[in-house]
Amino acid sequence: MSRPSLLILTLCLVLAACGQGGKDSKVSDKNASASAERPLQVTAEDYVTIQNNSLASGPVITGSIQPERKADLRAEVSAIVLQVFKENGEVVRRGDLLVRLDDTAFRDQLASAEQGARAAQQTLDQAERQLERLKTLRASGMTSMQALEDAEIRRNNAQSELVAAKARSVAARQQMQRTEIRAPFDGIVSERKVSNGDTAQIGKEIMKVIDPNSLRFQGLISAESVNVVKAGQSVSFRINGYDQQFIGKVRRVDPAANATTRQVEVLVDFVGKDQPHVSGLYAEGRVEAGSTEALMIIGSALIRDGDKTYVWAVQDGLLKRLAVVLGERDVRRGDYSITSGLKSGDKVLRQPLSTFKDGTKVNLVASAGSAPANASASASASQAASAASVTGK
Image (cartoon, rainbow, N blue to C red; front, side):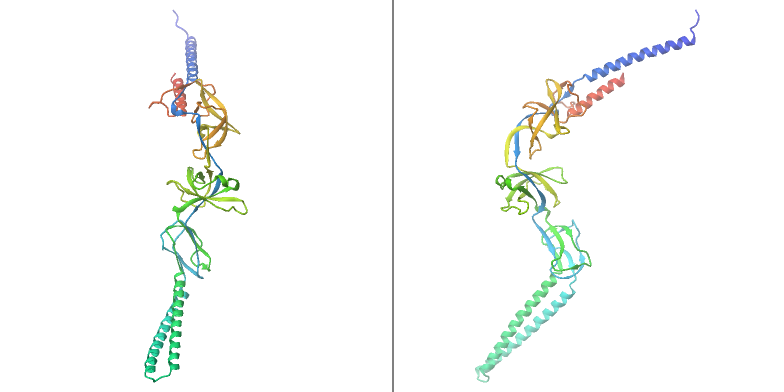
């Protein structure tokens, strides 16, 4: 027998490789098709059942967070600012020295007033001694009644002068004390208005101090809502800069509306320990003036597409993309009411993915330690298993 040529052997090897490649490709396509038809595993944690729930309603309230205890410290004397001891945001205690003004002139005035008070006291003492001597002389007939009366007048004038001198001394001491600006209560410095070397005129704002533990929501409502808002009602609102929702309670409703905007101020106290620590932030919410029953859905289950809203629902073992129409939003939980598109008892995925396809088969499985925590994890695990099977082949 003749040995086969090199060309024939090469052609045989190529044909064998092509045949094996075709088989592998068919197996891969078959595995991919099988993985594509694999049902989506969904546990009870992955979906929410639509049902009737209470829907809180009420007027919108807007405003800002303001402290109840705040002080605008202003200069009571005209002087140069010598030293500023506290900066913005620093904690202060009642009586802490915040700003010191130049007290040179006031110290001189105090010394002069105290000297005048001492001189007035000496004059009074001398006038009283003179009056006592004249009374003794008058009793023995050695002086006239006119002289005694003149001595009494001098004594009375000396008493009046002493009272006036003491008042001047007290006023000078008060002026001296006003050169030291101190914290009126425990709090923090919210705004410093002067620096070393500035001239503080009477009435000029020096510093602002607030108590961060006394923050409250000062909101405004429309005049049409005055009749439905009352003290004690709950208020749910959000504050710019904070992701959480705050709960408050109406303390009072002002009896007079703003002359320009015709809005009415509502004072809301915080409820619970969750409170902001920054004043002046914008806040908006709703007063819970009433409650009704409605179909409710959580916000994470909604898919926004322009001005339309969709959900992924599980119906008859299939995943379906349904359009829904939303109503009002619950001010307490943030859930939405549904006016059409779903009915009570429908199962809706909590956190839908963009990779979901309409008509995908769904298996509702019991929760277990190895089960995915949500629909997203189930889909990811299914896709990973499919990819692994294709790669292995």
